[in-house]
View 1 (cartoon, each protein chain N blue to C red):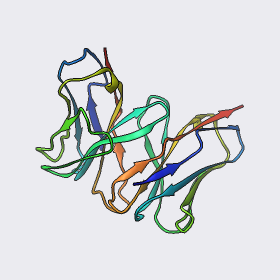
View 2 (cartoon, rainbow over the protein chains, first blue to last red):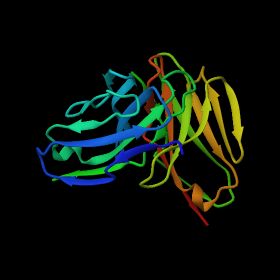
View 3 (cartoon, rainbow over the protein chains, first blue to last red):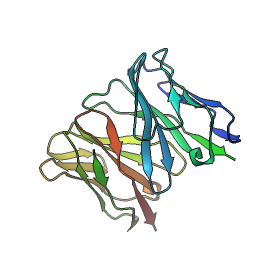
View 4 (cartoon, rainbow over the protein chains, first blue to last red):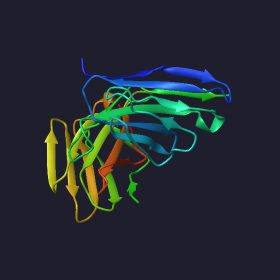
Length: 114
Length: 109
């Protein structure tokens, strides 16, 4: 089954404790991205990746890191989480970034930073 | 930059028709997407427009006017399960999609 898998689905942590949210897709997609979703603000892009070893900042990259060492995986790293990073996070992938490419989303990770 | 506007909330009656509008301003244009998102779930793809006109898919249709920077999503024969957020997303010249804040649709009996 074609899917985007995020783990964990729920996470409660404390300020400053490094964490990683994993994202994996089995569709051989080149383009992957991370979003955060907050009430009233919609989906905002954190980072995206056009292909292996190619990543770039989205609209709200501060406090986050990503890596793309393999095509299928695109982990989101919070080196020192802070309470303002409490949010619902989605990973998404599409075949490419060009015209007509539909994004497929993971089920989401709800993160609380205390 | 890109600017996308949609109404925050709409209500409609089961069985009725509702139109959700989306206006946008972008540098370049490479397509407009509509996604549906039920509360606490992932967005799922509904429709895509890159040329002017109407795209129909069962009960859902989407319209685009590039000259006006305008799209709408039309939902017919509303069902209770259509209660969800509807997200408009635009790909500008960079091919990176930008999402609007979403329209929360409440369908009541």
